[in-house]
Image 1: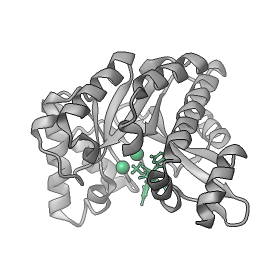
Image 2 (image 1 turned 135 degrees about the vertical axis):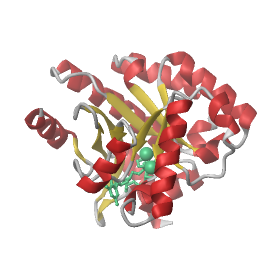
Image 3 (image 1 turned 30 degrees about the vertical axis):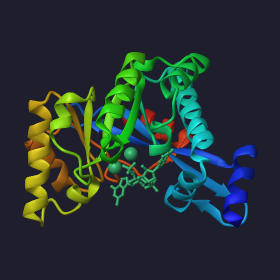
Length: 253
Ligand code: G
Ligand code: G
Ligand code: MN
Ligand code: NA
């Protein structure tokens, strides 16, 4: 309960920040985008990861203003990087179930893109399989989001319960293979088979694919051999603040 009143204040006092983790093309070695991940600089408790407050905001509805703040900040940052001369890269933002179900979400996102001057083609919205269980609603929402010109990715792919039938029906662009399958690629034959299969399926369905949670060379080699085109993980860098990312990016290429 304490945390809940702290959260309300946190929004007013701008105690949230975004950390950015790069997505890298494994063929070219180039950074193709970043995922924005929210953190809370709690005045007493210090830096809190999203796992410690996002679920609460989903329960009490604060995820709606927080999610709006995240979207606006991420779009602003993307525009600022482009204005500063960085080559254009994608900006991935996580949507929560409450946001996805919000009426007028597409209009809100369109307004944010207009306000910030960000080109819609660089915005990537990450949803999870669970958000697609109401197929009719999801189709309608995804269609209205696609009409803005943004990209849609399925996050944590492979951990949900959705049917494969929706994959070819929904207007989605990418699958992000959950890091639980990527972790033990080398040691676990089942995980290796799952990653191979998801990658092949994505290719057949003409979807992009990103492997999450990549930490070592062995995983990189495995993914390259399977023609998995993109990866994200501590192998490149953990999520870092905007200024550190900019620095990391400039010194890398
Ligand atoms: O950065 P970290 O590993 O702690 O993130 C944990 C989880 O929090 C991730 O699964 C991520 O999807 C979620 N998360 C991070 N930022 C956001 C956000 O801005 N909105 C929502 N809804 N979830 C987020
Ligand atoms: O669910 P989502 O994919 O949005 O979560 C991203 C989270 O995964 C981030 O909170 C980030 O801290 C974490 N993460 C990113 N890369 C790695 C990695 O290589 N290994 C592990 N264990 N976690 C990672
Ligand atoms: Mn994500
Ligand atoms: Na994920």
